[in-house]
Length: 182
Length: 72
Image (cartoon, rainbow over all chains, first blue to last red; front, side, top):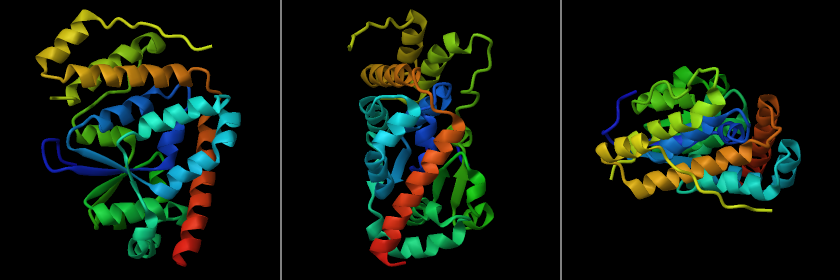
C-alpha cells in the first residue's frame, strides 16, 4: 500500500474490529481505530445494517462483556463518530457481485461497500474470510489494523513491554499526535 | 456513580505535538476519547473468542435482513 499524502483511502470496518475494541487487553484496536479516524486522508465506512444490529443486540453484548449497555453504546458511538454508514439497500448490484468474493455470505456487505468505493481496504482480524487474491485484482485489499496502520506510515503501535499497562496509554498518545495535523 | 477526573499530559508530549504542527484541540479530544474507551474496557470480561462469536452473530442477522430486503 502507498504511504499517506495521496488520495483518500476508504477503509471499511468489519464488525470484529469493533467487538475487539471492547476487550480489556485490546487497547491496540482502540488506538488503531482512533489513529485511522484522525488521519486526514482516510475515510472510514461501515454498512448501516451492521450498525443497527449492534443496537438491537445491545443487551446481549452488555451481558457477555459485563459492561453496562450505556458503556457499550458510548464505546460504539465514540468509535463510529464520523464513520460513514452506508445503506446496503442502495448497493444491490454490489451485494450481488460481492457474494463471489467471500467464503461466508454474511461478510458480503463489507465487500459490497468496498466495491462501491474502490480502491478500498477491508479492515478485519479474519483476513481468511475473504477471497483475497480475487479482491486484490479489483483494487480491494483485506487488511488487519496493523497492516492498515503500516499503510499510513505507523509502525510498531503495539508496544511489547513488561509494564505494558503502565506505558501503552502514553505510547499510543505519542503516536496519535503524528496524524492530526491542522 | 460517575466521577470526573483531570488528566495531566506530560510536557514532552505536548511539546512534540506542537512542534509537529498538530491541532491541539483535536489532539486533546482524541486523547480524552482514548482514555474514556480504555477506562470503560478495563471492566470488560469479553474474551477474543466471545468477541468473534458476537461479531458473527451480528453479521449473520444483518445479512439475513439485507438478503430479504434486496431479494438476493
